Length: 333
Image 1 (cartoon, helix red, strand yellow):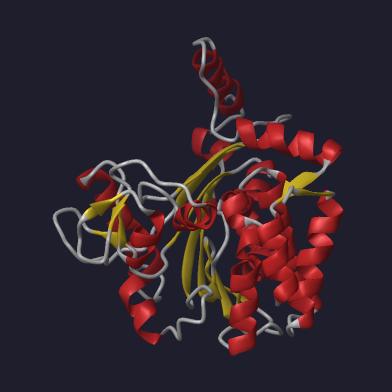
Image 2 (cartoon, one colour; image 1 turned 120 degrees about the horizontal axis):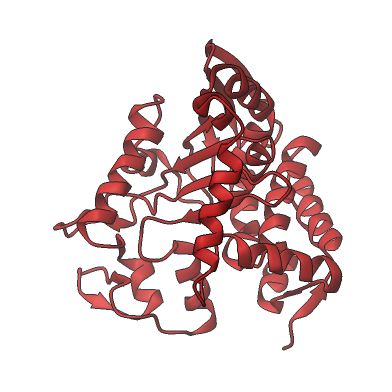
């Protein structure tokens, strides 16, 4: 069956109306629909409509409060805490982002711990508006155990993505967003759905044996990228998004999760830096652009995010091809 061409607006309407039907209020449904739409628009299929059934599952089970209203609290001039009260993370982020930006512009650096949220999305959408306000930004989040620590046999870390964004006045920001596992779990899920095998070194089966079968990896565990180096970064994410902000490690989130197919309740760590204050002038922008130019001088190079922005421009004009399998699953809800 051929893919179905949908406009960006149609994707947003589908996501929002589906979430609304299962009890999410306008603010919660709209925030998640924004994030899903950005993923489809930028060509990140593993975090777009593919995730909508998982969001719905948490609303149906009652794990996520679709009517939750996040509260924003200043713990210090440069610390803005957002308590999501069990809402979806995009809604909590939207609630606290303005305060984070203002704090970073005033103090030079500001931290936003987000607690009692359910994160199930890509991370780059969380940073784009922060960067568009002239700030560098970083975010990370843990999940449930799905990655083996270096030297171990049993999953303990989440896929634990990290994202870093750099502002580019007059241009789209440079943002990289990557799992600290060899591959994001959503990408493994898409490979399983489409019947693809994976490269060696992505993960192991339930008995700890290396496998290229995505279905077996989903039953087993993923490996951290770069061996012990990626494993250490994944450990850092656990500490920042759990111990640092008073939230759950991945194994703790799993212990209390009801396994409904959606994201567990946990935390997200975000910080923003004002390069103008840290450097003491505005020269940081031109200095960075000169560095990016050096990267582009080499044939075959690109900056993280370039492909996403190309997809965005294309899909805004031509629409997005959506898998019929995904649409059938959404219709079946």
